Length: 348
Ligand code: NAD
Ligand code: UDP
Image 1 (cartoon, helix red, strand yellow):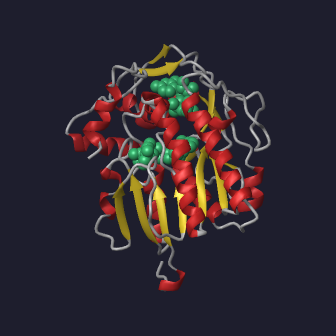
Image 2 (cartoon, rainbow, N blue to C red; image 1 turned 90 degrees about the vertical axis):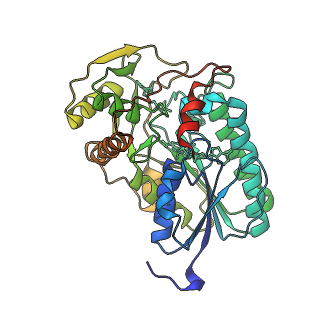
């Protein structure tokens, strides 16, 4: 979209080299804006943004959001944070710092600039929910001292900070509670269920079904999610959220595995493995608020969104010249940074 200089915004996207961030930047650039991507490349990769490096409206800054940032922008999307259980549990203290110090730094920047700021929060603020489906009014059921707490409580504290900066300093905030999202550019070693199952199916390896496979999740295709974030940012100042963004159609992990086996035409067998601690039994967003306030609901069915996602991982395998197996199914012990070695191999 062509824009005049006056209608073009300078947008900061933290975590912009990650899965969601890189798609959001694609969208903002195609809408005619300028984008500054700030990312420390912990779980993101340059590969996700390499197609943007020659775009004069795009700039990349290697920066850790736990440190202050002094830039001049019109809008901020705060996405920086490792998002998969294996990644955020690798260095839990840094995960909490990223959510909490990162929120303080970005909110301080928004306060100085008097600009809008959107927080990528998560369905994990509901924990292992006792209310189903989850509405924004539900306060959640979160273990404050478990292995997932660094992420869940970090994101909850970030929401608190957003609302306190809003009430105390008048910062214009938008809080999105994002439910499981999938699509091209997911990190192959992030251990998330969609990427794990696809990589295993393509390699003809066993599909690692944690627990009995009857736990549920609702999967949103990335383009739908990005559209929801942009719509939320454009709502009037009086609307802060929090608002659920996700696809309300719920699947068991067994059903997901079967869909992926069908799409990949794989004969891999399902194997049951131990269920990770505090793994939520069920998760499904109530998206009535997003429908009413953003005029938004997901358009892409899981079976359709899996096609480009499977193609992405097929291509990824081809580029590696062989079927790479970097599937993570366990969290590394604190002293054994298995997963970091995976990141180190890809983060440049
Ligand atoms: P991702 O891991 O692909 O992206 C996160 C990005 O943040 C990476 O590029 C990483 O390098 C960067 N990052 C991490 N710590 C940082 C730090 N201290 N300073 C600067 N950059 C840092 O994950 P994603 O799936 O794209 O998630 C993006 C955001 O959306 C996260 O905040 C996540 O919590 C939230 N979210 C995602 C999902 C999902 O299903 N993908 C669901 C709920 C919430
Ligand atoms: N899961 C699984 N096999 C895997 C990876 C994950 O059965 O190889 C399960 C996991 O136990 C959880 C669900 O899939 O119940 C979604 O896991 P993911 O890590 O993708 O996201 P989250 O738990 O954060 O929703």
